[in-house]
Length: 144
Image (cartoon, rainbow, N blue to C red; front, side, top):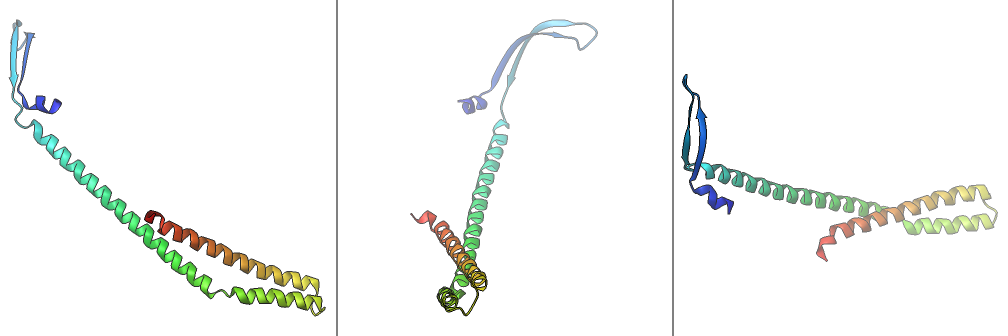
């Protein structure tokens, strides 16, 4: 409703004391104003708001694409590391160290030092696999 009223001319009435010259004059005042350019600033402001909203949408799309690209590259790197780690060899090493300890070929201290190293590598493999599953879930979260 306010927009329509901005197009209509406004009329004002009042009582005023005027002291422009040496003497003071009291009198009634009547005024009329015609809105010739009042809407142009509103149109310009609306146009700028629209452009700002469009730029925000473009920035959000760019940020989303960059995030997906980064996640995909991280996933590829993790999968390469996971594929190059030989879990079977580590598990066989555990079995061989256990047999060597049982047969007395190595001391208990050497056994625990070695299997600790192997378990750390296995834990790292599990952590990397967990990270890759989380990244994969993040990449596919919008598909459901």
